[in-house]
Image (cartoon, rainbow, N blue to C red; front, side):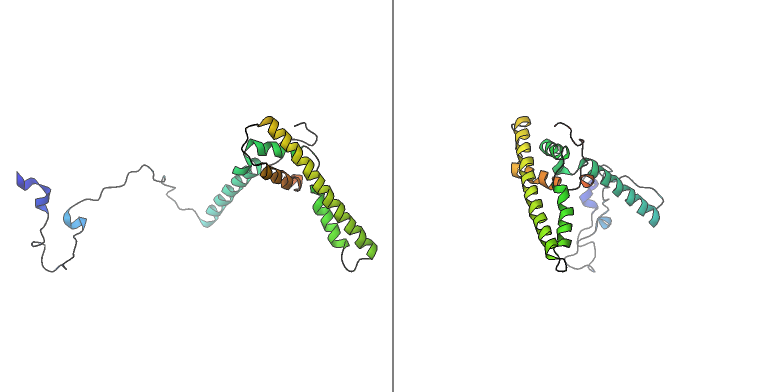
Length: 192
């Protein structure tokens, strides 16, 4: 009965031979122990048996990237999914903003203020720069006030920081409408 115990089948250090070093540990194979297989749950499913060519792999990566890019363009990232941010986007997208004209005006100012330009053109470009800067500041204040009013009205228990929301809306207002991400949900002139 005692011979059936698995410990009796294991070789003792005296039986295993003296050719092994003192700190030698026998392997599981030498001990007759089978290593258990890992469970199939949690493993990645086996892919196609045939490996992809470089061109096929490249096409798959491009298609995956295009799908991710399209989803981001349509829905935005995690920071864009808050309802307060959606409201701020709608406020900006429903009106014409001075910020969209700012970069075009800045290019004119850059060209007009060159040292080779006549003094009258330089003066005009500097006046244009001041006018654009003041218009952007006034427009930003108006957007911020409108957003504050609507957020307090529609989301009275909002935990969103208002300063971050204002900055988000102002940066969106300075971006060309076609380049805004996520894409505008409302048309120009729509009621919010």
